[in-house]
Amino acid sequence: ALRYHQGWDKAWASPAPKSSYDVIIVGAGGHGLATAYYLGKNFGITNVAVIEKGWLGGGNTGRNTTIIRSNYLQDPSAAIYEKARSLYEDLSQDINYNVMFSPRGLLMLAQTHHEVRGYLRTVHANNLQGVKTEWIGPEKVKELVPIINIDGPRYPVLGALYQARGGTARHDAVAWGYARACSAMGMDIIQQCEVTGVRSEGGKVVGVDTTKGYIGTKKLGIVVAGHSGQVADMAGFRLPVEAVALQALVSEPIKPCMDVVVMANTVHGYMSQSDKGEMVIGGGTDGFNNFTQRGSFHHIEETLRALVETFPMISRLKMLRQWGGIVDMTGDRSPIISKTPLGNCFINCGWGTGGFKAIPGSGWAMAELMAKGEPGPLAAEFNMWRFREGQFIDESVAAGVAH
Ligand code: FAD
Image (cartoon, helix red, strand yellow):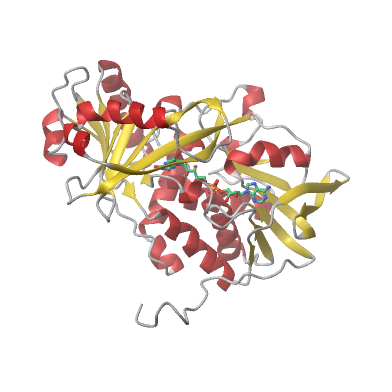
C-alpha cells in the first residue's frame, strides 16, 4: 500500500504455451495445481503446463465455503481426506504461502435419533482409521457454540460428531500458493486458454487443441470438476458424473460470535465465521443439473429458514453476497482418481460438494498416479470402473449434503 500498489513482484509467470510438455494438466483449480506441485516436489517432473480456461482458482476452488474435515465413514475416504487434512497442517510452511489454515474445530450436529446412531458409528470407524473424532453431548455443543439453540422446537440438538482439528483455510490462498510454487519450479500456468479438443493416436493422447493453439503432451491429466463430462467427451470416454450448481452466501460482518464450524445436515445448512466477521453460510445443491455459476433466490430462503431455528440470532443479519459453483457428483458421492481408456490420460474429478478439504491429498495421489502410471494406495479404490463393478465407496451420508 505504501508503494501505491505499484512494483509488486508477480507471484507466478504468465508465459505463452510451448509446443509440447511432458505433462499437461487441464484445470487450474486447487486439485490441478496441487497435482502439478506434487509432480514436481515428489517426482521431479517439472516440464508441466497447467491450462485454465478462465483464471486460476476461479472455479469451485475460489467459490467454496472452505470447510476442512476428514471424518468420513469408509476406509479409503478417511485415508485420503486425513492425508489432505494433515498436509494442510503445515501447507503454509511447505509452499511458503500463508493459506490461513485454521483448525478451529468442526461439529456435525445430530438432530434426529437416526443421525445420533450414524455419527456414533462414524466415531467408532474414525477411531479404527486413526482419525481423531469424538461424540459430544448437547451441553458440550452449547459450551462450544454459545449462540446455538439446542432445544428445538422441531429439531433439538442431540449431540454432535466433533473433529477438533477440522476447520477452514483461505481458498484463494491455497490456489495462489500452489500456483506460485509451481511457477517457481519452472512450470507454465496458462490462463485464459480453453481446451477445446483432445487428440489421440493408437489409444494414447498426443496433445490438446486450445484457444491458444495445439499443444503436444506425453501425459494428460483432466482435473476440471463440473466440466469433467465435457472434457472426457473430447477424449472419447464417458464418466458417471453429473454437474449441478451448489450455492453459498455470506452475511454482513459482525463481531466474533462463533469460533468453530457447525454443520446441520438434517436441516440442510452449515455456518462458520470468516476472519472478516462475515457468517459464511452454505446449503444444498440445486435439484436439477445445470451449469449456472450464480445464486438463486429460493436457496437463500431455504437455507436461512433451515438455520434460523438452530441459530436464532442470524434472523437479524443482512445477507451481502450469494454465488454458485458447478460441482461434479458421482453416484456414491466419492471422487474418481483414475486411469482412463486412453493409456496416458488420467482423470481426477467427482469431488462434488466437498473437494476443497481434499486438495493436498488429492494432488498427492494424482501426481503419484500420473508419475508411475499406476495408482498408489491413496487412489487405488477411487478408479472409475468401480461403478461398473459395483465397488461403491458409499459416502452419501457423510458427503451427500455436508461439505
Ligand atoms: P475447480 O476449482 O472448479 O477447478 C477446475 C478448473 O477447470 C476451473 O478453474 C475451470 O475453469 C477449469 N476448466 C474447466 N473446463 C476447462 C477447459 N475445457 N479448459 C481449461 N480449463 C477448464 N469443498 C469443501 O471441502 N468444503 C467446503 O466447504 C465446500 N464448500 C463448497 C461451497 C460451494 C458453493 C461450492 C461450489 C463448492 C464447495 N466445495 C467445498 C467443493 C469444492 O469447492 C470443490 O470440490 C473443489 O474446489 C474442486 O476443485 P477442483 O480443482 O477440482 O475444481
